[in-house]
Length: 352
Image 1 (cartoon, rainbow, N blue to C red):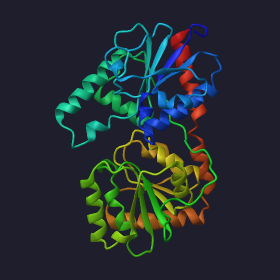
Image 2: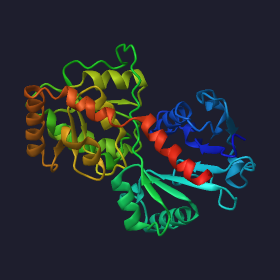
Image 3: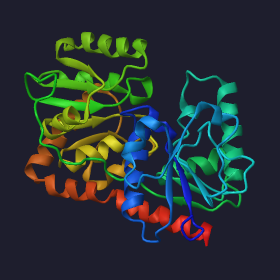
Image 4: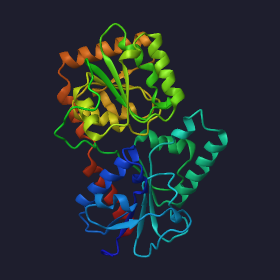
């Protein structure tokens, strides 16, 4: 143990590659190691298949049986639970706990029953009561926690996620657009609100590239139905899940990045698009105005004609006022090393 200040960070969700939680854990872990000014022992709890990603080599193998009996935690002073609903949580152990909460999206999901929502809230409240410090990834999420679950006397902080783009020597993606295009990315589910986007292809030659796993075939069918209504179905392209090269290529080469989501705890794709200086046009829902700031553009409602007007005005303003550098500066504000340093300060306060 290093100075009696060893920390075990739960990266179990990295078993699901290319998800938001995968990248959250990966980049936070790498930055925690890079900014480890206190020379504390940092260990990472994950599957054997991901252990090579942890630069300092300290690794505790995750096993499904740990849902019932966790491995020995005697050498650790603090457990960082990086996901609010993890099955792996030190309920009964004498160890300090930092709990990161990403969102309360289930409460806004009409497909979830009242019983599931109530169970989620009950479990979340129990975790908050067990935790020694709560971290929310945006002010919106922290206010949502206070509204629905309460935090009582548990200390709480907001620590924004960092950007995740590491510049690559890009090559052409698997699907190469045949004209100028608009881009969005995310799991194809109703909360992403992608079905409002096809009307933006009316009266132009743009394509719309939608990347991400299809979690709901019914919702994908709804997007296609809207595209057919507007007679643009041949220009709406679903690529499915894509790799880092293809994502960056689309972000770098798109005319604009669109993100009309109605339920986001943070909105990492927005930061990624801004890294390339691209105009981003967002909904005004949940955390997105907090992330995009004054340098983003916004759909104030989802009326097709209003959205078409917003797109045209945004592209014109971006061109006339040369917004690229300002947008890149906004992206640079979200920095993983800064995030990691804030976590180190919380670890310090709990392990003195």
